[in-house]
Image (cartoon, rainbow, N blue to C red):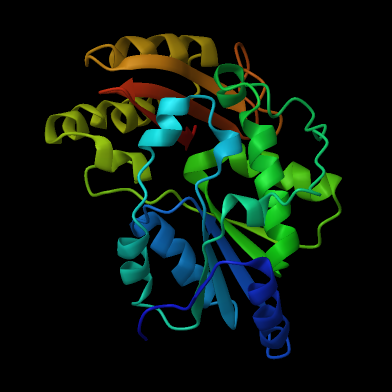
Length: 280
């Protein structure tokens, strides 16, 4: 145990990973820092399945549409390293922007079959191409056997799975359940920007999802979305979207349920944008 070793360049990191691969599998947990118990659960799962786990900490500028959101995104490297010191066999990759995006870096937008234009993509144009770009580069640098992502970012997970197929990566993508506090709020790095009152108000997000799930499939998806929006309006959060979609295509469901139906929500609480989802 003890503070994890921090690598800031791809060159330093790759030589260590090459040595580790002689002993077994390497797992990877990409993050933007401001770590919480959700991230730590990914690290814990990865440690159970690999000889070494790489945690990247990099606030990626290409996936932010809003300059103030990028500026305000929490950066807590010292605290992050302290949290990771509870684990053995973990190293940290905390690169500069130039290390992730060198001058000779070429990226052409990838056809994601529309997964990047719905839900989050409709409100944050270009966001998922930014995600794909940074994850592609991280995968090329770390070259792990497995990579771990939380289901809270359900659409991101779908996008990354599609990217892996498109670019023929042999990396296994492992999805992990959304980590929630006892009151149901999905853990997010952005939660630390909420006041105590805001955090309490934000509970309406998970409460709305559970209310909609409990309505069951007797009603149409359209009706469940209508009732869910009315339920959500009991609090003073600003709703950006509340949609029930097919879990594979992310297409909006209206009259018929699919075999894998997921409700996705995005809302603002005290100017902090929060997302969540729940299988219906």
